[in-house]
Length: 175
Image (tube, rainbow, N blue to C red; front, side, top):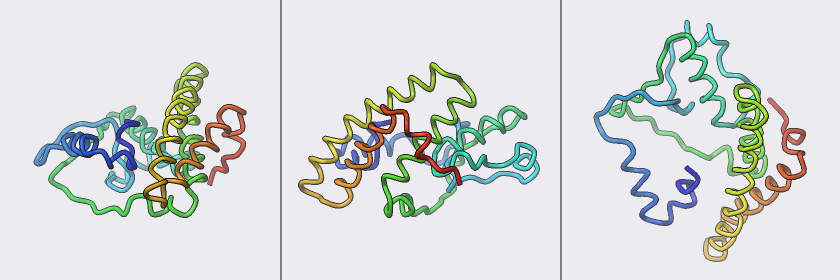
């Protein structure tokens, strides 16, 4: 997943791999659906309590919601013929650091809620490792394409420090 980050699409093989994952005219069960593409019946949605606000600006909110639906007997299904236009990342352009921080904190919250200490520790290790790789890559790209890669490099560097110092969760303000 990390290699498929948006800013890694400058490499043609990464972009091609992302496009191959979704075959046209298919209906298939998936683990979760992104919020911009989510349609749910109100009954089950209300039964599970909706989206937990503790996951603000994090994919973990949709993963958690899919898990809740599955627990009451529903599936997450991708209907490929449908089309949704989503201006992804528009809310994250203003403050990349805050968005990355809330995303990391939300995901760590999810692991705390569902899996426990060792999974949280593993998630933090993955975040430190992947962000440590992304910092120099984004910085190098920023030498040629300044915006937004320098901001991406800074955001990842700050969040590596937050994870290592244990201040990530304290810096996160749940909405």
